[in-house]
Image 1 (cartoon, helix red, strand yellow):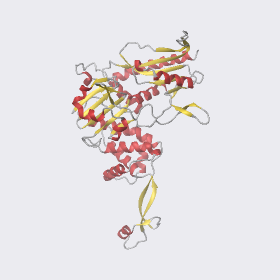
Image 2: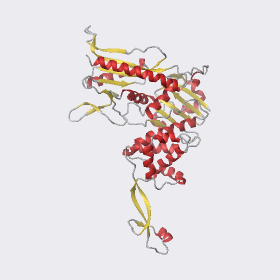
Image 3: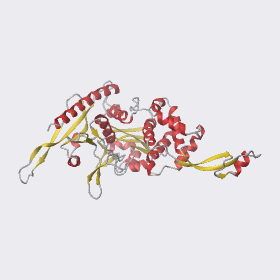
Length: 463
């Protein structure tokens, strides 16, 4: 097994990827939409017109003689070659000092994001294991509650099914062969088939088989406990469930993928269930020579994590679910749909904020223009960038940027005291000795971050 580990948003020489050349040739400069078609599970699912996770985004992109990684995290494999992309906040455990570089570093921050945003169990093991296939499979299992809840919110999936009856209330097509077999001599019943709209169909049966499969895992109880009501609904609906039908149900679902746009959540759930139930070596993909794996959008995780901290003070429009959309213009019709990350709830002193999973120095140009446009639209005079900052114990100072007025042609450029943008960094601990220590330290940093935000909001409301 050959594993290449790297960090997000970094530049690496191409020669450092040569020992996983087969995999690199298959994934370099390939879009996420291409990788998804090839068997890679992408989270969150790709959505058209999404600014967070573009269908054209790449996990590694050629840049002269280097490869550049982006905001994508996770595992991807081909045969016995693996690429593991960690967050750039991986740290060295104090009790594991050695010279193996990234190989020995722990990605506690990625684990923490998954726990906060997706309620992944704390026992998720992000350390190097003997089997990367097992790591990929575990991630798929932990995603099941998220997608099941999301699908159930649409209501149970209904579909026409053929149901066999044998009674004296004929409503469908008589099944002559079955009638002769079951009702000879004639006892007053007729065997017939009827096509009905039913919740107990091949897709819901697939979900039931997945639930039963997870229950048998050593950590299955912890996963099922997070979706008790949804599981109860699925079990109560699948009256036709038989354990020995699993392969038949898998085949039925593979041959009949959900296509209807209204049930897109069920389409993703269907694909996830098939991947889980096909738990065999190199079967999370399409074969030993095909690429497979699971990828997470780090920028989306960061945005949702920030939302969990500031939810009491900001509205959070979401372009992936098309909820909370705003419009730039009115006229004969609304147009210019926008989805600011965060819109302050204080109407008189509106604040617009943007979560950026970037280095401080990389927040520039288009980022400023977009935030200023949102501020102008919502009559806000304070915009904030929330970004992660790798830090040990030093104090991080917020960067204040005041909007200019005037032009250099007229030699009258000066800053406006009433309109500004803040860059607020949340400190990510870099000296934790284990995951529990990391959680304790980042909780302290979160409290400091929120107190700092409240101070800015209070000051802003006074001018």
